[in-house]
Image (cartoon, rainbow, N blue to C red; front, side):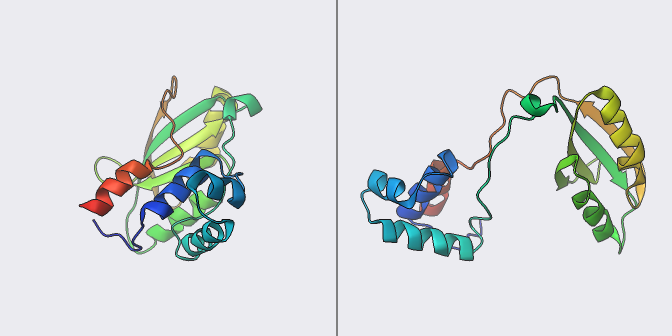
Length: 163
């Protein structure tokens, strides 16, 4: 495993605190960890500058704002020098939450949110099917999502660091 930035126990504890509550103040985190606010501030600044922290986000319940349909689309495209265009096109689609370049049957796995099945069909036919190099898609509608994590277990990372 390549670790671009060595993380110590304090970094991991700060990251865990921020994952649990990104709104926590540096003072709250410092008090919980038994260090100064300045220590937390400096550590967070370095974690942001190094790219370990990419942003501070709010997790929104898609169902509660009218987007109860989650679909995973397996997408096959023409591969070649212009594959980057496909990624850029995905970035422009507001309905697309995640794109993963994968091995196996498909080139991409794409997570899409929709208001209902008709909205999903519209997205598939007017947007996904129009992606550069599109060849074939298979859509799987999630019946439920019992596990949706938005963080990394810092205990697992700590184990990686010790090895």
